Image (tube, rainbow over all chains, first blue to last red; front, side, top):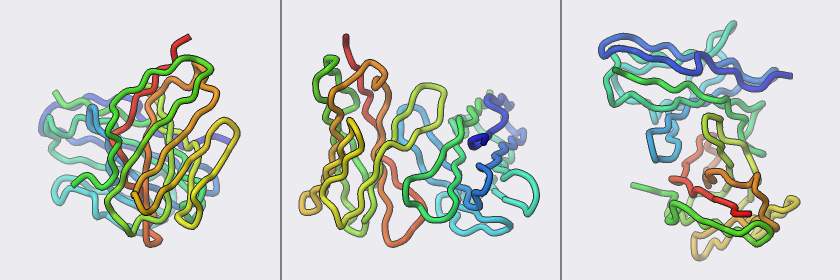
Length: 114
Length: 112
């Protein structure tokens, strides 16, 4: 029973390139969340998705960032035209339904923009 | 606007003693609180939670206390063990929202 799987673990992109981060939730979990952690800071909510639906994207930057959770396959967080300030650890979490008991987080993708 | 604050960036405790980590919040609509533990290069791991209808929740060596009037919660670890050395985050949610608001974290070091 694998946990939340994120790949890649490390991603290096040059300024202006696109970054695609993948997240496969735990089996049976239909809710996916993306969080970002900047250096020396706590995690900041970005977006909450269910299959084929974006439920809450209040934490997503207005430009360059998008997320999806298709009917088949992993959830994708996409960052277009990356800038140095996008360098951070991006964590995905999943839950079966409601929040009780907390989410299960993946190990994260560390994005470095050079 | 930091709605959840952990004012101690770090804490050092001797093995076997009690570790107390503190967290304050400003949003009175928060009604569910959680503590997560994080090792380097790993994702946060859920430790314990508490609903606003309670003032205490225990799970083994971990106890969370909630003081709603003071908008304060704390995590007690007793006895502290070397494996408890990690960064601890408190988090909160409210009004049925699925998203969490995290504090900045406290780095706990347990000394042998």
